Each structure stands twice: as structure tokens, then as C-alpha cells.
Amino acid sequence: MIEYSQWLTNGLVFLCFFWVYKKVAKKIKTLMIYGIGLAFLGEMFFAVLLGMYEYRLENIPLYVPLGHSLIYAAVFYINKEKVIQGKKELITSILYCAMIIYSSLWLALAQDILGFLCMLFVIFFLKKKIANKLFFLIMFFMIVYLELLGTYYACWVWPDTWFSKISFITSANPPSGISVFYFGFDLGCLWIYKKLNAQKWQRMKSLRKIRATKGVTAQGVK
Image 1 (tube, rainbow, N blue to C red):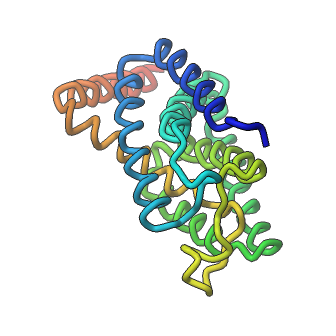
Image 2: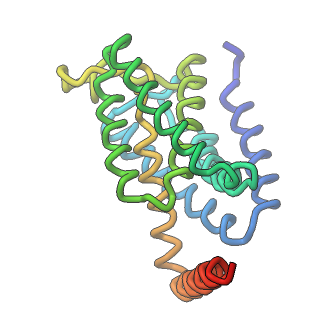
């Protein structure tokens, strides 16, 4: 491996974060900042305290908290693309089926019980979050790609069993449905935003209701 490769990655991700931060809307800027703090706490809890996974140098690389926020911003804007929203129902159905097939294959071929259980929880979660289903499905496959990339290059590793202790819950490296924990990150960022920006959040909800009402009225006229 290249010496000091982690520092090189840290620098590149920092520059990418800075560039994206300058481009995004004010609300996303705020969520990205909250995300850094929340991601660091999450990494300390899951990686350091619980030992759920382990980084190559046994530390929390700087690029990880920054990367969490970058992923959030990327998925937000991908989901907003006109071409995506224009075929929202079709894309949602395709990704939903692909998710089930992907985790089922990992279960069959790699005894990935942990990943499959996480995927089942994703299904349950999506039934509760109908309006944002596409956002979370895009997030699911974004995490699939990054987890496969990170584990392939041994940046981090997942143990063969959950926490290396629960022997009957076997795991692949990476678990196929582990993105469910990223969903918690997304919701956590939003929760912090709501609490610290209550007036802005209420104003935004009111505007959405007005737009929705106008849209229903316009359809009725047609």
C-alpha cells in the first residue's frame, strides 16, 4: 500500500468537501456541518466502543466524517434531478427489487445473515417513510458501492460475525444491508436541524403545504 495513503485520501476528501460546501444551498450547508459531528460520534460508538468494524490503521480517518456529509449532499441532489423525479415510481420499483435481490444473493453466497436482517429492517423502515422512499433507496446503493470499494482496498473490515461475538449472526465483508445505519445518520442530521432551526423548519413546512394545495387545485381545474 502507498505510504501515507490515508493522509492523501484525507486531503482529497477535504478539498472535495470544501468545493461541494461552497456550491450547495444554505440548508444543505448546515446539515453537512451537523453531519460531521454526528458522524464522528457514530464512528466512536460503533467502531471504537462496540468494535462493529475496524479501520486499517485502527483510527477514525478524517475522510470518514467528511465523507458521511458528502454522501448526504450527493444523494439529496441526485434525488432532486428532473430525470430522476420524472420517472420516480419506475426507478423506486427497480431499486426496491434490486435491493432485495442483492441482499438475498449475499445471504445465499456469503452467509450474510447480518446484511439480510439489515435489509429486512430497511423494508420495514421504507414502509414508514413512503414520501422519501427514493431518497433512501438511492442512499442504499450509494453505500453499497462505497462499502464494496472500501473493503476491497482494505480501508476497513467487517468481522465474520456480528461484533465478533454473536456467532449465529454471520456477516459478509461488507454486510449487504448495512446502509440502514446510514439512514439513522440522515434522520439524526434532520432531527438536529429541526431542533436548532425550528422557525425555519415550520416556515418550510408551511410553504410545502401551500405548494401542494396549489398543485391539487391546478389538477382539479384541468
